[in-house]
Image (cartoon, rainbow, N blue to C red):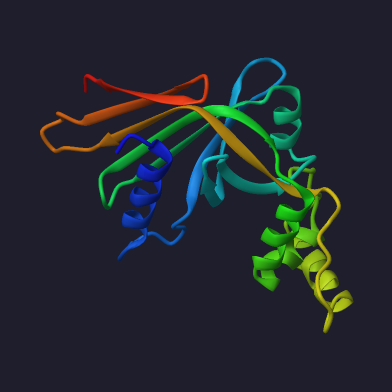
Length: 192
């Protein structure tokens, strides 16, 4: 398969079938802070297309601030149950407001309430405030739609390289590196 996006979609589908994972779409997204240090965290992969890999977040979260400072980002996935690892390197940019609205509408009400009740990454005075703030948001919005916060949206990582690793017990892993140059993908095998 010469198109790594098509290959990724097949692997993603394979990883979903009979998956033992609780968070089936969890991927680790890494960004760079202003000091140049990498910062990784797991997010929910929302969509994949020729444009790239989409995840949602507060735009003023730590990751949002880091992306606005330096768009260079990476995404790593390990699907142990099928023996697949995927590494993506690219540039992150904001998705459109229309796309963000569409992803917001697909979220569960519980996820919407939690998102609207908190400011991601901001300091929290005490653990007891978690339940209190969520309960206040639930009461305030009872019986009505949960509005998308203005500072909530998403990012797409447009890849410059994608590496697929097929795990083998023999340690002779198959590694396939795709690199994009001038809009075209080239493929190269790497030693394990």
